[in-house]
Image (cartoon, helix red, strand yellow):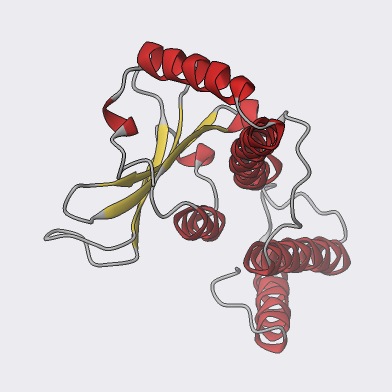
Length: 240
């Protein structure tokens, strides 16, 4: 309707002046006209507020995924080009220059990256988030904000907006990671107990006699066989 009467061509000041002129004219007419206009303006304001609330709730939902799983200082950006290419960037600035961590999901792909591919750049290898978490966050951001969005995650996560539960995709990934950590802890406990039983607190770096060396080799064979059997029973490969 507004496009048909050319309102989009007005400046902000011109639009305000038009609203004032229309208000004056409506007062002169039937009171029902003013009542209808008041209701229309109130509805427009409520729609705008609801749209803004929805946008911030979406920002908080995505930001909370980030801050509760991979920490703070992240910027989430859904980028869309004029030609329809979509990427999702997740970047965290480090304490030193050029020390940022950066992930990019190529949602639609391009001439160099296939659709759905994920690249991760890190300054330190020990600061590398789990790629499964990064992928879920980026995919959910692309679905929630297909036209694009830029989020300061710390800021958005700290707002008071009510948000939906975390997506099942993220819950599944977190459950898998927790199960892997439990399995690692269980294996480490088994290995430590086995070492104590077989070697009985012996100093494995101490010099040995020939007879002790033979016994030590037999103990190591027993130890390695027991660890291999444990790994085979629990589906563990290469100690992981």
